[in-house]
Image (cartoon, rainbow over all chains, first blue to last red; front, side, top):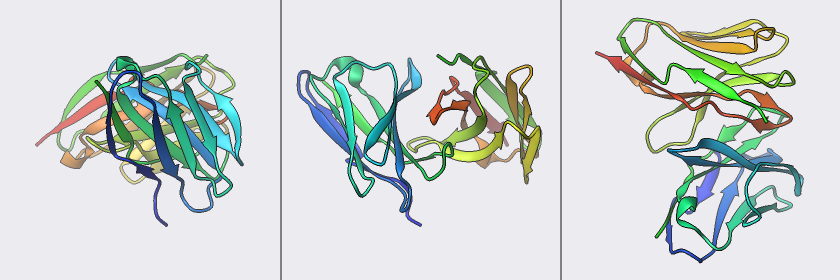
Length: 111
Length: 110
């Protein structure tokens, strides 16, 4: 089976812009979670979607949003980018309640 | 929220020796306990996991032990090899949400 794929792999934006990241889960997986990884804060949970519904949400401002499509693919959007949003954004998919498999991530740099 | 502490933050071992990383968590509702390995430029890779009804699980050179009463679980790597060099994360899980430890950088010296 193909693993979790994320596009794009690298992205450079400027402050104030918005960005959309995409995640395709492992075939058959209906749950998709998003995480932010930074050297200072480590890995932090953003949100989790299951069957197009947000089931869990972490402690991030409303500038961070996501959605899931009927084919389980997911997108996350960050509006009004700030320098502190520079991070590796990771997507993970799951077929069960807990075991999550991660993609390679999207490296976002905000200038 | 879940408070997760992972120790040590760095670990240097001689090839062939064992490595042990401990993870302590606060949420008694956590019921799934995975360990992830992350290599440079890659996403975290699940290497072993354990559920709350099991005390120990082994997969070749890797083992995980769980003490739910004390709220900690540990990763054990035996006969370490250079390819074991990476950052390891524990991620106690409750309700589909993983709470990651800060990570342990393991370096295996040849």
